[in-house]
Image (tube, rainbow, N blue to C red; front, side):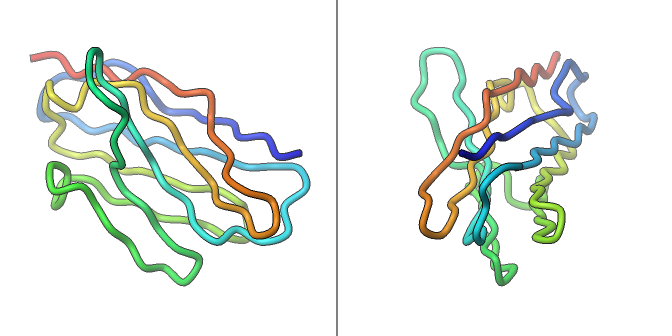
Length: 116
């Protein structure tokens, strides 16, 4: 089994910054990719950013240039630095880990609220 623990969510004013982190523990053979998703009220869950084991990244168009994802394979941790936050970034954010020979695991989700 694999457990994910997220931290860093909260309330911030528009234009501000937040840093999210998510650490995995348990039976981890190898992490192939890590990502962040979000789900706003009344909307579908969407991919925010992803990073592969090799360091390749991709971002949703809505966050390009504002958010940065990074992964620490040695610590089994993924980070999301969010700058220039907008009210439309308000959502529950989830981390996911794709683990070789084990599958996909999701964090419990944490609220990020950006006030205008």
